[in-house]
Amino acid sequence: MDMVLEADRLGKRYGSTWALRDCSLHLPAGRIAALVGPNGAGKSTLLHLAVGLLKPDAGTVRVFGRSPYGDTDGLADIGFVAQDTPLYRDFTAAELVIAGGKLNRRWDAPLARTRLAQLGIPPDRPVGKLSGGQRAQVALALALAKQPRLLLLDEPVASLDPLARREFLQSLMGSVADSGTTVLLSSHLLADLERVCDYLIVLNAAQVQLAGTVDDLVAGHRQLIGPRHDGGPIGGVAAVVRASHTDRQSTLLVRTDGPVTDPAWTVRDVGLEDVVLAHLAGGDAQTSHSEWGVPA
Amino acid sequence: MIWLTWRQHRKQAFFTLLGFAALAALMVPIGLSMRHSFADLGLADCARQLADTNVAAATRDTCDAGFRRFTNRYGSLNLVAVLLITLPVLVGLFWGAPLVAREVEHGTHRFVWTQGVGRTRWALVKFGMVGAGVVVLAVGYGLGISWWVDPLTQAAHEGRLGMIVFDLQGIVPIGYTLFAVALGIFAGTVWKRMLPAMAITLAGFIGVRAAVEVLARPHYQPARTQTFPIEGDGPPEMSRGDWILTQGVRNPDGTMIAEDTRIQCPPGGKGPDGRACGAELGIEPGAYNWQLYQPADRFWLFQGIETGIFVALALLLLYLAVRRVRRIA
Image: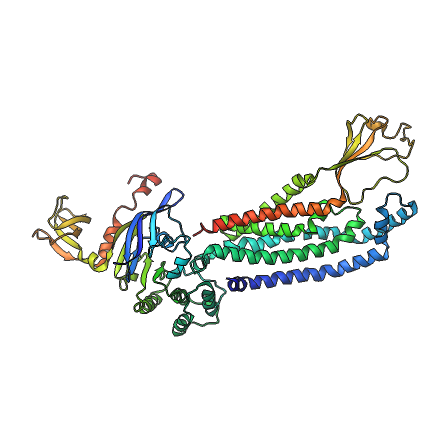
């Protein structure tokens, strides 16, 4: 399978803190991938590494087989919309389309203009005076006009109201459906992206917790309810991701490697959100207890 | 890229030119009237004649009177000249410091650096265009001030090598302005916010300028020494245009008796108490005035050296700024 984005033990450090560490992942071509993780998990860092804004401190990252840092030619294939969709606020949308044309060798200005016209964005008003949703649409139109093979979006909907979120994602899906563009978009809320993505990368505390197609992830996890569990092996279970116990009963979220046949356990299917939350819940707040000088 | 730079900065350029034009509208009439008075009082001739050491005493008196009248009328304008010295750093603050810092502060660097041009080219075009615009401005400023301040300098019997006068005219404003802008750009790449970048630019500019002016400039060329007797006929020796670094009175054996002063007595002159001239300072017969100076004709050489220093510093800062731009995310 064609890999668009490959990271191998990728790391980025700010001072002595690793924002991203030992990050290995492969994003196959043609996917709409969600990059999910809490704030500060390293999502923006990963995207900045992928678009060549940052230089890796460890490991490698490759986009279409090229190392993106300092690779100006490679930028033509990557569309990037940064967090908070920064644009020159005193430029009008029409001027931004012109600017994009001057800054890129491959530039589909009619595409951008058509999109913006369909969305009812005024061409002659400074984008600083547009609503957040409209500004995000302008940024997306500019990124699409590059006709990128990989589109990276950093929290594109974080600042939008629910209606604008849906419209933004719908228009995004509409435009990449035919072109075969690979999309990687980040969010700290899975709910935003669940409907549109078919591939999922979960990032937590600077590391990749989970990566795979949505179907595989959902199919590979089960919830088990049964008598209080002491940690012994269960047939068909590869790993216990998360366990909660009452006096007599245990509820486990497990990764399976076969059918769970033990009649003591009630087996239930899980949703994508349950899987993600179970993986995120593990081991994040360990250090702060000692930093605050309080017992854990 | 050129289109983008122009589109981004056209408003700022317009206001800069407007400010420059307003300043010119204020200064040019003053300059013209100053030059008229200068000509009417015959001071241009005077300046020429006084340069000759054995000028007739009568001419000297008339000329000095003329210069005094001129100075009385226009001398206060020297203060205006002092204000003008701030212009290069203002350009650095408002053109240099925001160039990168503003982009980073607004996050737009992530937009523009991920388009197809690459950030090194972005930096080179931007720095180049702003630099070129600033040089044009600085040339206009340097020439304009040279023209404007010339009568004032002549009337004050100071050379153009004097502390503030030197800094205002000729080609050094180009060096200062380029340096201020480059410092601003560099500060913006390090601190990445406009206000700190501007503050650092201001502090750094003043620091470097003062250091060069006080520590380096007097030594661009070996200073010359000049000695002349304490007792002499006629009016005191006047150096017109030389830049006196230190002066004092020395005994025949070379020991300094009185620093930062000079003594001039008529031949055989006595003090009020009947003792020989200067006896109260402890001077011995044969003592002489001594001064260390840079001659006036080194003006352009010094201008060239100082401009070179600041242009070199500016280029170094721009190089560092381009390098730093590659590491901002």
